[in-house]
Image (cartoon, rainbow, N blue to C red; front, side, top):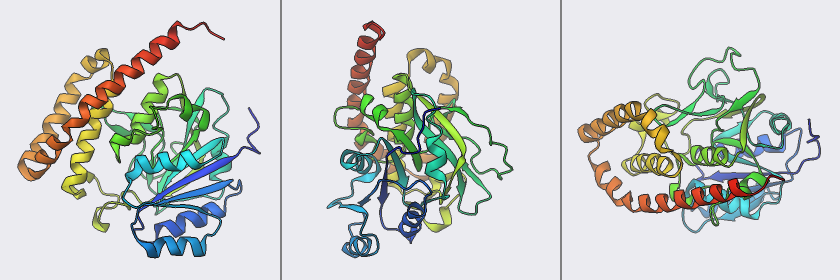
Length: 325
């Protein structure tokens, strides 16, 4: 196993300043047994008071204050761009970490082909599972393994996974540079939602693997940054999203499928996809009709997704023709 004791780690935290999540997140980073080399905070709150407080309470933090809401994907791209670490830990501000999170997560990079590591993510009650690795469902949606189940240590075995939940994921910089789309590490057209599935899927297509380390524990207030309090950690979460965010969520699923799905797999899973879409659009037609107009305005993104698919296919085809080192 490669020695990661001295590995350099940069942390990128995206905040909108909701509740007091950021303070808890930064406090958990300061307490890490493997101290990060730098912490970059992208402040999307548009609140001068928050940025002033961050500067005063956490002078060691590298702060980038957005003049407009960059949303999650572009915020991560900005943070990664200005960071220097060999490994990049991307965090929601509603996540706090066990003191050994970074130390344990780095052990997941035992193979040079591993580009993403997921820890065991619990809810803030420290009893309920939030994610033990990201997977791709038959409906072509992100599936968080163990989501909402009581933690009875049923997922304590290390192993390969499809990807990592975007709320708390550790990435190898070499992988991020390898799979970069133009200037984007994360697809900025996705803004928020599905960006973690897209980067995990894209990494897999490039030949990178994702790994799960249950000893790396994090705590997440699911939806804390964008749902009302009554919607935290609730099932059927889309009912707590605003019309704008729901339109964003639906648009992003189609973008990710356009970019990454093969024709063979699309045909293989066509029935689960049709059933999912039928139920989703029936809900929208019955209860959320404003979302239809929002979704139609987002349709301009689909040709862009198709172009990205073509570029990725050409890149992978070129690589397959190159002689092995």
